[in-house]
Image 1 (cartoon, helix red, strand yellow):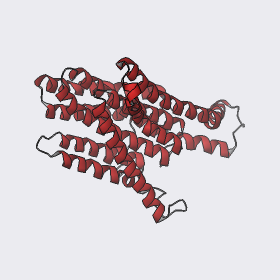
Image 2 (image 1 turned 90 degrees about the horizontal axis):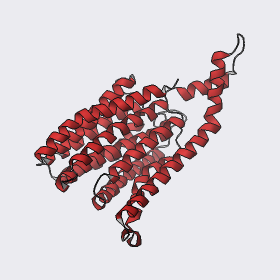
Image 3 (image 1 turned 90 degrees about the vertical axis):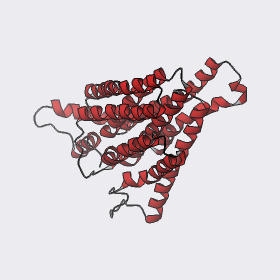
Image 4 (image 1 turned 180 degrees about the vertical axis):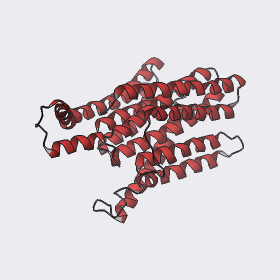
Length: 333
């Protein structure tokens, strides 16, 4: 059964661990070392993720058996390593972006490996469909990453990373309501670790544009890859709809709509409010739609499950209803 208190504890512990790791960000900020600041951001996020997932005791197996395990074992360490390599001053910027693009293109194939979509089952896609889905997903991630990078340069500060973090939080709640509890919890912990690091970087770099330019791309890269992967998992291994998945992924880009000339000339507080309301409005819409679907399809199963635990001897629920409840609470392979 879901344990909301455990999930809140995991998020809190992830945030605290990220804050402890953020001491390295503070040290790097005081010395003014941009490269060390990037590396400290990676360390802070990694610390929050390790401690948060450790508390959850997700019981990950090796080799990984499903999309979530492949994300946690393979994709998450890879993006952290890529951003750590990007912190090396001697490494050309184009080579760092080459690694990011390669990761983005292979990510969908890694997550789908061994799944029913690519196996020899009745649900397996034809070769052309598998290629189309993997290629489209990879290019979608590349495009999203690139557009958010451009937007973060036009909107310096924590706005773009915070919208990615908010979308990740929304993805976690939506995926949970779509039936994939473990995938949704993984997104919540990811969002908590990312938020702590964002707040620390914003505090340290508020008076240094050079340090800010060094720290935000790292958090943006980690955030975008985590967001896309968890939404992808919820879509193909859970019951997350394609429409909700795209709304969650594209919501951070709505901040760019406030760059239109007639709006940009207005007061800064008004422009910032419009940006925030645009993103928040889409994410709240996704949550409302997911909650309505949950109330319509999942809530009756939960009522039946509770009645099963307190029913008198000899009274049982029909097998189809029990199977649906167990499938909803179980992890989707």
